[in-house]
Structure formats: C-alpha cells, structure tokens
Image (cartoon, rainbow, N blue to C red; front, top):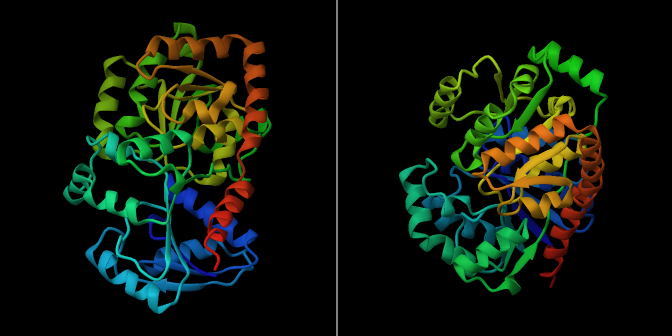
Length: 381
C-alpha cells in the first residue's frame, strides 16, 4: 500500500509535546514497516530538513510532498484530497484531528492525542481555532468521516465517544512509548552535569513541560511553599521546558508573593539529550495536571529512576499505575505531603523507583509502531 503520512504538525525546530511524539511514531513506523511505501507531507522546507535529520539512520525510502499551506486552512480542506487522489494513495494518516472531511478514493486514519481545547476553552488560541473548537462542527464531521480514529489512552477514548458520540468500533487504542534516549544516569555524574551546565547546585524537585493553565503548575509552587522550611532551604524547585510568555506573568507573581524567587529556577527549553541528566539528578518529579491525553513526562521520569507525584485525573492513573503517588489537582496540601514523604522516606522512594522502572516497560515505541501498522493492515485490499 501507499501511505501518506502528514508531518505538518511538526512546526518548530525544537519539537516538543505532540510534535516530538509524531517524530517518534514516524521514525519507528519507517523502521519496522517492511511492506508499505510512504509519502511524507510537509508545508515548508525547513521542517522537512529537520525531520529528515531525525530519519538519517532510517533506510526505508520515502517520497516527499511540500505544500504551500498548513493544517486547518481552506486550501488544505479543499485541495489536499485532490492531490492525494492524484498520487493514488491507499491511506492518508494524519496525527491530528484537523483535516479535510471531503475525501474519496482513499482511507483516512487520524490520531487524537488529547481533546484539551474542547475541555479548556480558556487556553489562548487564535479566533479561528476558538471558533473551530467552540462550535465543533468541523471536528464532528472529520470524526464521522474518518475510517479509523486512534487514541492514546482509554481516558481520551471515553471522552471522544461521550462528547462526540463516536462508535467505539471505529476507535483503536495505541499507547505511546518512551524514547530509547531516556535512561538512568549515575547520580554523581548527572548532578555534576547539571551543576556545570545549568548552575543548579542544590538537590531539586522537578517539573518538565509547558506552563499552560491546564498543567496546573501554580499548584506545584503552592505545594513547594507548604513544605517544611528545612526542605525548602535544602531543595530547589526546577521548571524545565519552553515557557509561554502569555501565561508567565501570573506564575511569577505567585512566586514573588511568597518570596520564593531565589528557590525556583526556570531553565527554559533544553535539548532532549540533556533530559536524562535532568530527570536522573532530580529527587522527585511532580505533575499535577488537570487534563492529559497521555502524560508522557511521567514515564520519562520513571525510566530515569525518579519517583513521581501526579494528579489523579484523566489518563494519568492509567499511565502511572501503582508506581505513582496521586492527589486531586486542587489538593495542594496532599501534593506537598507526598513530596515531603518521598524526600524523607528512603524506603518509600526506592520502592517507587523500582515500581516505576517496571511500569515503564509496558510502554514502548516498538509496540506503538506495530499497533499502528496493524491499523494500516486492516485496510489492505
């Protein structure tokens, strides 16, 4: 079969979040698929070159289409189906839910990583995207017309079926994996690396991700503030990841209000090659999000041997299993108690690390890629 794999969700030279996941999906599918042929779709040369650099060790050959328009444009909705028909593709795979519902002559498989914009409309978006999600006419039509919908957690599957009345028979669950680059690094080595490169000298409590409102990182600041004074003086709180300026001010105001500026460090975006060092040197990882389609940072932390405190919402208990300490996302006192208990109880911490290393084995890109290939196989003629 000829499969068109849409890569246009990758929009930044430093891929994060969904874009990083799509890169892993693409790389592993091309490695393990020895049968099908692929066309990769981009909307600019720069992103094409970026993706090709990640695929430099992949031997499977593939063709390229570069379009002069992106996802969620009128040209995309009206003209792309014609281009795909002319190429005589069998399957169009788009790792998002913004695509044309007007397709004929080929099968369409979409992946829904989360439905966050439907549940948190206060997230800052363009007027067009707000209308798209608020009225939801187009996504409903896309979901109805798609031949297969892939979700990455049972939680997201339930949300999809309930909110949009999608037949469960159309939905396939494919858990994501954790990149092989994530691994435990010796504590002395990782701490030396963090001190040399990021000038972080104290032990630290860690969060990795963006600062969007649904990530609930204000709760991390408040939980840190409730820790005993001796722990606050001994441990920094470190936020790793690209910080959106539009959400930054309210977080910094909270930090200043409680005089924690000298204790809290924002590293900004870091190279993926640094993340294993950053996780491995951390004393505890905290992830109190209100909503996640999956919660990949939890698995990354566990693979690097770090105990995890998480909220008990959406997909997070599904991913963390019994290896994580959970709390309601608004229960700042309980989040703080969990952090304190891990830092003060060596037996608890070691037990959580062991459980985490076992839990993360359930999630591999080998399984994810082969499950996606199985979805493709369902439409073999």
